[in-house]
Length: 478
Image 1: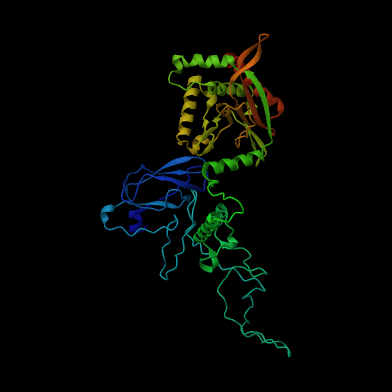
Image 2 (image 1 turned 30 degrees about the vertical axis):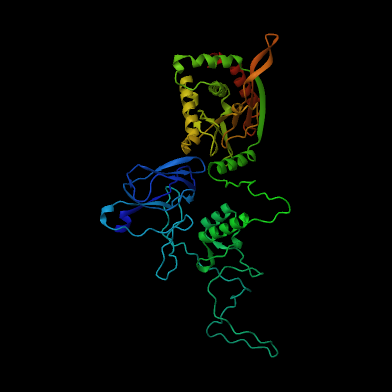
């Protein structure tokens, strides 16, 4: 490492989740010239799982912020440069980023220097110190420049007498992409990160004009094409009737919402869902909630019907442990779990997330109430970490807070069951032989029919309903 590299240290985008490849910079907390210390939070980023604050691992003065807020950056890419010895003299000039990207250092000939190693790597995997320059492809026979030169010493072919004149051989062209029969490139040349960028932006690489060496398409080429497409979309087009300007909004699908959408699609088309419903009188449960709010043991804790629904589900899982499992497709095994990490679906400004309470089965009612309150508060503040959302075994989604009676929830990937808790409202109900107004709700349980059959799913849902109908079963069934 050179003296300059030792002085000006770069902080790279870490993998803050489990194998994530990119993150969006939401907010910078520092600016060039600010002094930073080891462990100080310098920015907030959003991954496909959550928003996370990043602390810097060394001291110094901020020399350069490599990316603007709102930019998505690959894992392993430097995002901030810090001068660790600001008293050593004048700092080198900052690189001028283009379109939110760091500028490449020019070579002696004025061309961008080749970048060493991979463009991004996951934490724990170093970048190989090899050049990423691509070898030129061999020309396809029959295409331009594919005529082989005669070997030394080979006899010249005899020319047929009436053959038409052929043009003189042109100088050998520089290496170029493969050509198909129509003269177009068979497959545009681009590195994997560039292909991923083009896919994310919806850009057809065949329509991109390459500017890199040997006809390779660069990230800048893809960004330029994306800007051209966006400009074309924003250009007013004469409409046969009234204009629609200002009546539509387009928001990029990214971060938590993008990951959630993909997970739900994968779950819906991988696990065969079955959903069962039950309507139950929860009048006694609602009275217990009111009593617990006055109990000194629950002082300062969040006490609501969801707390008792969660406890009822944990009791049902203890009585029917086979529902707490997951399907291992790769090994063709069912993995039964002797612990319950209880997920609670939470709607946040960034989309739906499902943090979970670790080892919820072992918690007392006050402990469960405390953990549930912390989970909800953290989710609303956007501080949920990827670790809080990993390892869930079963989930509850509370659609009742929106005034919804029931639904058919989709399983959280890797889990076998999810319980939907509907709104609680007064309804006419037959109680002790008479029709009376009672507090009634509807529960819906979706389960993976590969490992949970109808009998097991029905027993779990019936047990939850039974506990909520007569909450003293929290004691008698414990």
